[in-house]
Image (cartoon, rainbow, N blue to C red):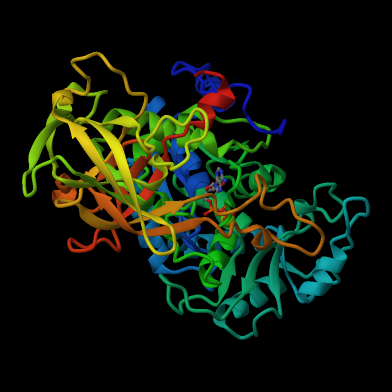
Length: 569
Ligand code: ATP
Ligand code: MG
């Protein structure tokens, strides 16, 4: 597990400046840019954003904030067959949810299609681009390998006027898909494969979600991206490491066009244990029905974790903590959970909820009588106040808070044993009632009225304190417990012939339908978050919960494996 970023632990708030900020500061002091710092977040609208994108969003908007600049939102929509307006809308909602604002600076690469085309014409006229009639397979074959240089296309030395004519006819729709491409004329022997005459335009008679049928040639990512950055006056184009080898091409295009030249800086993408972060693979999970949708609370999408109960503050705190690096690694998902607990511990009101109920009857508690006990809403936050919790003759405790034959060190309820009910009395188990199959279905107990403050006047001690819910007043609800979606720390680390889909965790969802919640939850609203005492943090499902049938998601359990790992507890 040496690749896990365990060693460092949560970093202090005042961490040293990262290499990106250092680079920007150097650029500013050298006067490389006259403009203020302008960054951008450039998603392709071909899926929902995931927690990896959150890192990029926090980084790009954070740089703009720290340097008094701006960050644009730009949709990189150059791939009409995979992109949809649904994704555009979802992405905007997610960026806003994370707490960032692009103000009026919403852009689409498709807004630049005409400008990109005009620039392509310029490169053709300058002898720096040509129309190639080779097929896709032939182009691949001519490209060479890392060890062998490529071969020039027989069409590479067409005249500028012939190229211009062919490009215009490509655009006019005269040629079928895949029959020709426009390529940059750079160097088929370059050690960098990206410089071996990369494709700039392909013919694609496809409807685009914004430009409709205006275009039947579409720019490739490399041809669109740097020029879009340049048009927007981006100073620092921050992207993930896989684009490092594309930087010479990025630079070649903007230099060849003599336009504003942003600096591209690469950083390592976020990888998380037990998690896949790739839109295409997440889409497969949705399409093949392994999850209930992009916003399934098990998904690492922002829509999924939001529904599960994550807060934007916790996600931002996590992104601050992991910082940026130049080396790929896999961050332990326990660190994300740690960031979430840290916040919810401060903010989430405590309530009592029994997930697997066992009926308890207090034999000496008067029939039909109800008492109210005072409960603290959040011991971490005095201003959260108190609430009144109802107690009656029958109540529920957790099934596993009782053992008929207690093992050593089991301090909860057992025949003849006394425990404390949280916020209420000591109770003693007098008798066990079983059904015909021998299962325990009810406990007959007595309570000691003298212990209402949680301690006994005669000084006798109990070792266990149980949460409970009054049976007369309980709300019956559904609670969904989640575990990692994948059963391996690296889901892509698979045997030959297997895929990440072979390591889906079959127990990632556990639905409990007969949970008993304290009555104060009746007024809670979708999205509200609570700590269920001794269980963890839960949130009312924003999609499926109904007033008459509430549904809760477990956001995260109380068990803090990160604290243990980091040795800070
Ligand atoms: P995916 O592989 O999930 O489709 P992508 O890189 O193709 O991701 P884009 O929509 O092109 O998705 O990404 C928008 C921005 O988010 C890019 O700048 C990209 O580098 C960044 N990004 C994507 N995934 C991660 C990640 N795991 N960690 C950090 N940044 C990421
Ligand atoms: Mg992409």
